[in-house]
Amino acid sequence: MGFTSPFPDVHIPEVSVFDLLFSGIDQTDLDRVALIDAADGVRTTYRDLIDRVDATAGALAARGIGVGAVVGLLAPNSSLFATAFHGILRAGATATTINALFTAHDIAKQLTDAKATMLITVTALLPQAQQAAEAVGITPERLIVLDGDGESASGHPNADDLLAHKAPAPQVDFDPATHLAVLPYSSGTTGNPKGVMLTHRNLVANVAQIRPLLAMGSDDKILAVLPFFHIYGMTVLLNAALQARATLVVMPRFDLGAFLETIQEHRITYGFIAPPVAVALAKHPLVDEYETSSLRVLMSGAAPLDAELGSAVAKRLSVRVLQGFGMSELSPVSHCMPADGGRQFFGEAAPLSSCGWPLPNTVNKIVDPTTGEEVAYPARGLSEPGELWVKGPNVMAGYLGNEEATTTTIDPDGFLHTGDLAQVDHAGRVFIVDRLKELIKYKGYQVPPAELEALLLTHPAVTDAAVIGVTDADGEEIPKAFVVRQPGTHLTADEVIEFVARQVAPYKKVRQVEFIDVIPKSASGKILRKDLRTPTV
Image (tube, rainbow, N blue to C red; front, side):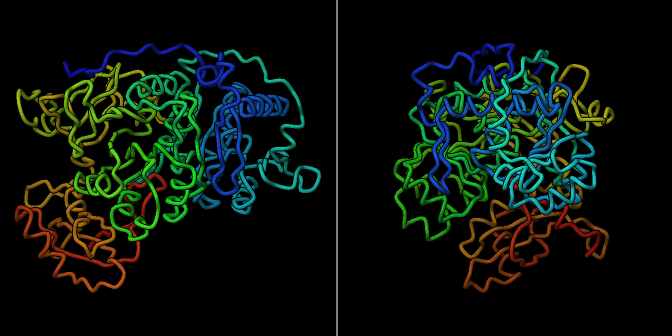
């Protein structure tokens, strides 16, 4: 049966992403500032943004880009990215957004799999973009360098070339329920990334689902540091925040000093972050040098946020810290705390150890992965753990060219099997335990790495940490911690092991420790455990 969202269902318009965001925009909103590039202070109004999106779509259409075409977009956050992204969708094409940290090999691999016929990038990433384009047969005139010298000087069109074309935006006709808007690739933290097919309806639905909960408005200044190429930044910033007529203050990458300075200078009211940012905000002395009182809300997602860490950030910045849960396959948000923590709906705020409640229009199940039986909903306290399943209009259309993976992930009843171990409490709040694939099996017990990582982060001499299962000399899987020390400290492996042992059940103890300079993470903040894993120790 499952359990439904406690929030009222929302209406999901049968429209494209462009029409949802910009058609029928109120005249009073056209001269509001939509985007501010933090690096140079350049401002783009909603009027300018819509005009540039239309012009970009017209120029792409003149180059043969339309319904059925796939365009690669490789760039850090900027107003140019926003224009190119919405221009691709406005032309009726599909955008496959590419991690700005990818090598030429990685870029070419995604372009090939997505069958992209054009690539849009920036000068800073041109060497690897050019190498990838040549490898897959994309010609120079179809490699657009948004901030480049232009087609006449370099052979590569730039943003000005597209805008100067002055072709009208094309009239496109497609079914929002089936037409692919975007083709992001799953983060590949445990294996090869897969192309996630998200339709216009998927993205429109997710905006409609989160808007009443996040309560963003036209008076909000929202810090856009989450990468736009990742589905988290794409949905909450490029889509939901713009539909709310908020102002996005855009940062190309995370740097703590620039992050804090941007909050102070622009009086940021709302921020979306990933847990690594929360670690810096909780622990770094630089935070105390900046004025951050304008902040109302910090929403964390993309990876689990420990409750103690979230509380430390909330206390230090005097800000409401919230948590949500999602995955690319869910467009991406499936669970969320409302902007007030849940006080209006439920009379109390959700505990930070949870990811909040299921979104409107969704149904959840928690299923025992061993028996396949649904875990009973609790009358009080927490349910038994099980795999979280989600059904709703935000569930992806499937994995590109991978029917086997699609049918394994989405069952005949439409439930997406998340691969995450979760619990639900009597108030309908969901608690993520860990990825099922990441659970460490020690002597028959299951050890969630996320629990140990959260504990390690509470040690004053630990800057960051990750835990994986490794095989010891006896063939037993054991927990191993990778630890980044705070500068100037001399923490030892024995001290780490003892610190954890004092606070957990014996079977959960860390049994090996390795000190490293940095924990490898994806652009969205997920620990890349595959980069830490070795077959034997």
